[in-house]
Image 1 (tube, chains in turn cyan, blue):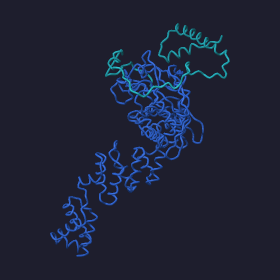
Image 2 (tube, rainbow over the protein chains, first blue to last red; image 1 turned 90 degrees about the vertical axis):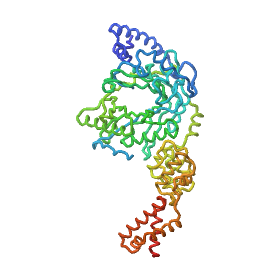
Image 3 (tube, chains in turn blue, red; image 1 turned 180 degrees about the vertical axis):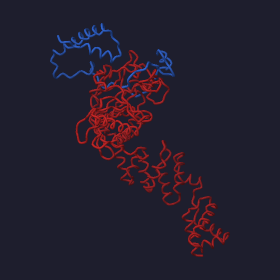
Image 4 (tube, chains in turn yellow, green; image 1 turned 90 degrees about the horizontal axis):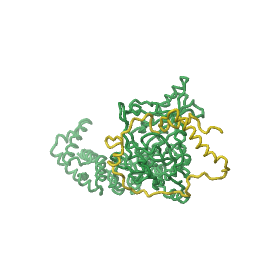
Length: 100
Length: 483
């Protein structure tokens, strides 16, 4: 059975999610993710030619709301949830790189 | 406000630019929740569980945002498609839910075009709906992200509806890049899609820049320039980046695909992160939102109610008033073209109407001024009853308080002193100053000029400046002939 995901891919995905994994965890997750992908690969044995890709499990579209203002949260209550606050803003550790 | 001269690229190289323009939509609320969409509020006051990404919250899309996005799409000649929202996953704190909801492979609008005022056509790849991210301020030694000690986050902007307009890499000069943004901004304003204020961040530009040897059709490695916050910066950033890439090629090296930041202070671009592959954002369809499927009737209704676009409005103004392209552009941009057209239709001299509006009506609110009053004012100016500077003052009065020009002409004492009044005044002055009069009548040209100045001055003094100088000169000369 071909390998579904490599160690390198697991390390890469972990880096994107800012996760630090031990060597042992990389091995374990490579195996576990591989098993999940193998399960999902079952679909490949089915003939899906001519089947519309599913956007959503519910047969709905255009579910929208009117552009009407609703009450926002009390900022004090919001900021009380944050580990650190300064000048009414969330204080977060420095991030390297820039926004997308 | 003359445009800066176009920076030159070295001979033998062609510039290739594509623009990505983010525009905040002019809605009352955010894209997926009922929080107020407003610039400049106190930090973190317009936030709720949905835009803070709190567990259990669910997004519901704002129908007005979808409508505005489709209006813009149609104004750009796009096809409006069935679309689905997608999650763009990344790990920056400006989105508390760790992804931005956007559109990926099925955008609302695709395949349009923007025609620049000179007729040059720039293709539009797509114009898709997405949410804005929160605003982060990096606090550190230099305020730059790479040297930040910590960052402060305000989520008021998180979830504000955006459309991102992606042009094809059709732009070949810096002027075209600037004109593209200018024309897009004009379209956004007349359609009411956005107020498109660069200074408030409701219109933001990224430029994809590459260069290639002249005449080649290939697309070479591009760099995406971010942090461009004015039209002036746009031109300078493109010029800097193109020259940087040319230098690399000429040194036998080559640029790397990357995101670069424009630094206004040093007038340079500096590298940000290496461009991640699209896969690195691990896009997938947003399971909490269902597809948007506009009916043909919806699209037809948008087309039917589409306001006249800037290109047509400029053409109409030029046709009716003989305006030059600069005046037409300014007045349409300020939405004063209808006022000009009405005033001209009411019989005001087109040239003077244009001049008055272009020069003296650069104000945010002129709702007190109606076209009839403007036409009357211009007619008074044309007839010589008001000087240019008087007309300008009365125009300011009309903008300030409305009403008719006559009210202010009277209040400011701008009524013209009539000829008979001037005549009797002159007779009296001649009687009081016989030697000056003699010197005026008999003197050489220099003497005559000097004495004309003397009498004119006296008359202006007596009328507190209300006499028409031209008329005074005429009366003096006629009187001298008679003796």
